[in-house]
Length: 313
Image 1 (spheres, one colour):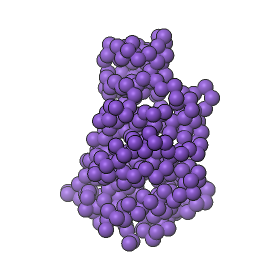
Image 2 (cartoon, one colour):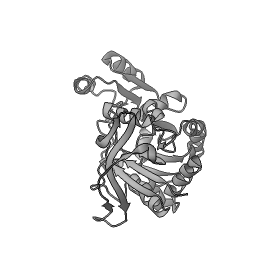
Image 3 (cartoon, rainbow, N blue to C red):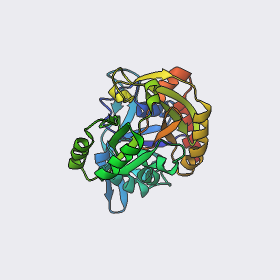
């Protein structure tokens, strides 16, 4: 099966080809004989009933500093493609949300991965609320009194932006810390969004596990260990990836959430597990493919494309 594939992603030039999951997906697509087209989200448009993008035919190669070649710039009708990858990074703001509305208009005749309707309705820190027995105690609120009451019940907490990513703006607040009001003032001065607060899990010192699911099935995991002096384990902020096996609890979590992810067209998903608790279900632009492939020797990108090809067939 030869597919026409478009990648909606952040600029391809600065990416780290030894870590970027979108690059790995594109590399595998190229190896499978699919034709590639690349554009950035600001070049997506609605024009008199058509969903168009201005971008370039794309060739990728695993050469640091010389990892891609672009063809001549062109405007394309995305309805003419077999697959469109929704792969730009958050923040999950109105610009991001608008791209999901536009891509809704071509899906599923053109397969958009992940399904944009459910990406819009299942952002990482909200889908977990459907599984309260799998998650640590959680509050989503903008009201300071509500947040104070939650901390009074649970002691040490994690406070973070509801629609943030990559560990940005994540704070651990011990029970006696006096900065909650100041942080609340800072966050609410930036935007009108609520905050999310979770009970702090001391097990994070041993790592924050990223489990990757393909079409609802777990295919492996990596452990992300915080740098010394850090609470956050995100690799964007210095977390270290380690090889790790999935536990019975990990498999139990995946068995609970996997059927929903598959039903809603979430082909490539990365969940975060600390100790025995599910903290996030990442559907917007999950990462971790290359680290997992290096540790396990499994071609995860191939599994992703096999799932897509089955759906196209």
